[in-house]
Length: 367
Image 1 (cartoon, rainbow, N blue to C red):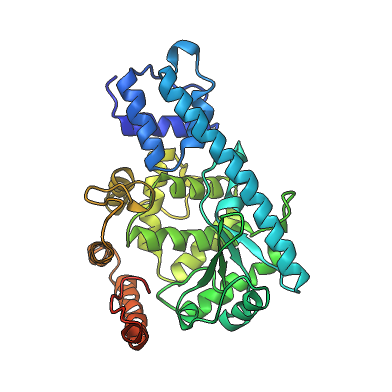
Image 2 (image 1 turned 180 degrees about the horizontal axis):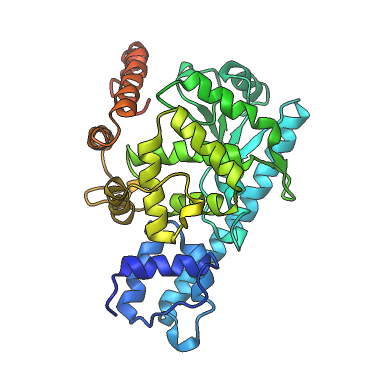
């Protein structure tokens, strides 16, 4: 085989997304082992298994790897069923209190995949408009969080764990931008009523909302710890299911909030990995910046957790230093948003300092 395993892995994803009819490689045991490891790092085990399970018998991975792959996929599918149930349950619970909500990212994105249960999910992200105090009071009244915290006002979500063991993040703001954030919130809020009730029982946002909000989500992680192929794949699926009018709307707002450089780099990655067609891109791709993100995705995996030197026992201080260094590296690509983001970060960090001193927790890594 002459092509790199990165290219082979990309072909697996294309077949899984039904964009390529045949997986054109025969791999040896060691190569399959590496691909399974890559699928784990990128959090796309279930999506890729849909290809593996339909290969001819003599082209499949060794029995031991195939069994591990199958078991992992069954666990992902089971978790997705439970997550959908939790998303629907909390949608009803909030609605009973007079609060309509929208499910962000994961469960909503999965509905666009050929096999919705194969996408590996994380937390359940729910958006309830109204501001932090209103959302906090709702969660307190429902006994979902223990007590008010000043930190809730400095973040864009309030998190809790359900009795079934799932992490729920209730967003009072879906996402933030560094430049003209108040206007950005108004743009997102304008799309709230265009959300659609799914057969699973929760509301999914409009494509216009998702294209804009998830681009910002990608952008933020690209300039901090990094993102893997699962999140790029989500955005690829969104783009290919959206209309030309949806994409024009998203691009007009990308320009409005000065996110063009990061967007162009992301478009290049989507074209390189998934073969995204120019007509589905928000803007012309930027190869120079895109190559940096491409390397970051393949080396670091999901949220950069598998980059060299990043270990399970990685200290909070080292994580914080790595995030700050990544922000500095992004400066040459997007000076305006990098500087504004850093100013915002340090403003929050110093506002928390008296509280941290009182708690004897001086470290400012998690703000």
